[in-house]
Length: 202
Picture 1 (cartoon, rainbow, N blue to C red):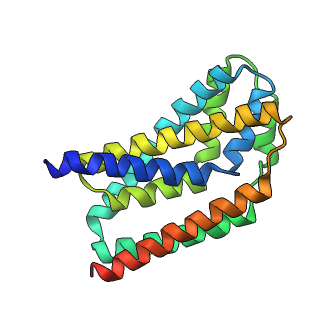
Picture 2 (cartoon, rainbow, N blue to C red):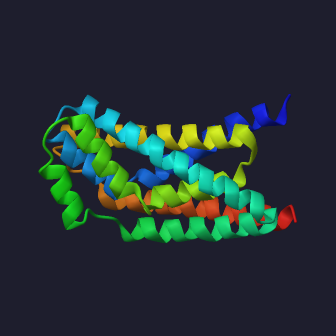
């Protein structure tokens, strides 16, 4: 099988899992819940999808360039440290800033446009954007690039969609502490796995 084709399913599956975990308890989920109290869920999800697709396309491009320029061992080691850092970031928790809360609660006009703009701005420099860049350094070639972009975008949209549904069913009250701890543990596992892989394949 063509190695580019073979890389695509692995890159898609891993990126989906990692970004889905990264989005648990993230401020983007909180913003999705806030938007869902003002608008119907579907337009909000469309806006999230548009913003995520654009931000993650840029992230994948940056990660691809970094991965092509830096030796594989160091890429894997830096990625491992990054995932351990994401675990601590997740454990600390995340919340909307005053500006982000204002954008979510005072948005007027189209729900799709409002959600797209708010999520685009919220994702710049966020944990999920950095995690997508990190993933893109691990999967080179077109199969990897497209797989990381697709998996990370779908993972984030589904995580936010589930948060909207669960939040409406539970009155916007989610078990935040349990979600944070579980997501942090999974990030640590990803980080340890990458570190072991880096030294074993050296």
